[in-house]
Image (cartoon, rainbow, N blue to C red; front, side, top):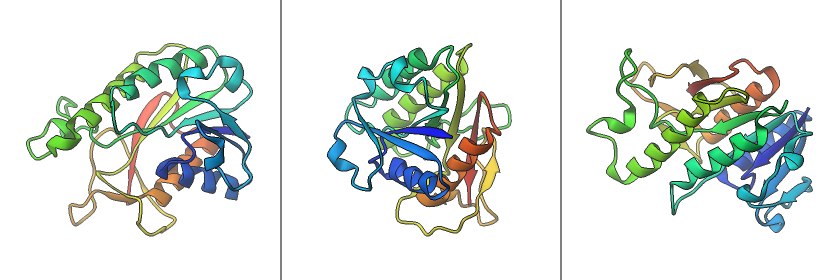
Length: 207
């Protein structure tokens, strides 16, 4: 299976890259600076907006693990561009999403980012990532999956090798905690790459 990882030098992207290679998948990194990939992985050196259908059409899966910490509206713009280039292609688009767009009620009318205790500093980011999800849900000829992590997404957390699959609602463990490490999230993402268990859906994972 041929997999391209966009943003493969970031925290989430590098964890997914490592897990995919460990399983023997044929992986290519897509980054703006090829020098940031030092493990011998083949590289496409391009900004997301310069990617074309020709660049990705031979891949079975394109993972978007992009992070934007300045202009968060880029989450929406980059999603629009990726939708355009994978439309009517066999390539599946898997997106590293956020927890802020998860619902906190069974009616799916209130998102975590809209609750009073949600940190104000993360509001713009959560809103932008939620808009990206909405764009995917509106597509007609795109094979996509959006994977949200738990509310606490820990880059330094231990690898347990296990996770719990949830839907579009925020779920917690028996102690009321919503947590997952980056490495366990990466295991869930590569499982989805291999199994395609959630086509044209958003799902979430937690510990």
